Image 1: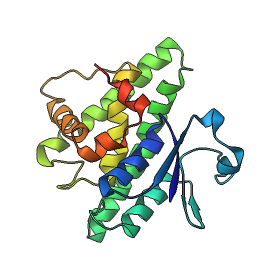
Image 2 (image 1 turned 90 degrees about the vertical axis):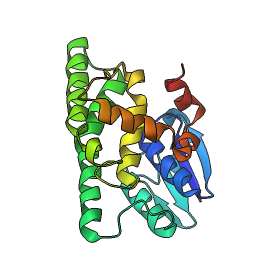
Image 3 (image 1 turned 60 degrees about the vertical axis):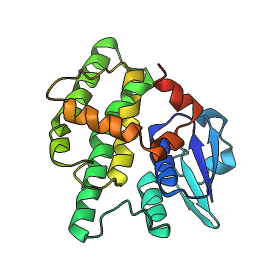
Image 4 (image 1 turned 45 degrees about the vertical axis):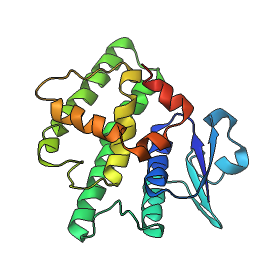
Length: 203
């Protein structure tokens, strides 16, 4: 099994978290997107990383990769057992992909005007603030256990400071920030980080 991964990309990072949490033996080949071989990128119709290759199977959608890994390597499970809870997790992952990731991608691109960048950052902060109360009720994102949803959220949280976003430690955001610190201390999360990603939050 080989994961072709970008060195600093929150989509690649989420897959690496799954691999690390499950301690899956997988060769990780790191690239900047500009230097990735054309024969690898051609696997994806979008010519993007990450790409997961397992024997004759090649996957280019992160949600498919992550669920494939969870099904093929079932311990520890990263999706709930019951269908309703699993469906809720999938809805949350879809929400992150459709609503939050475009904001993150726009900020990281560096192509926004200053006013647009400021507005986009404020929108992302507001989105994150709306989920903070959840972590008063659940130790993880709408769940008692660490799931694939946390694998989606954690790479975004890790990149906030590098995007110029510093969440204030106040009463409203305290549950979210406590959750963040708990996630960042997980051995699986630490093991998932590339050298470049470690530097994103270097003191």
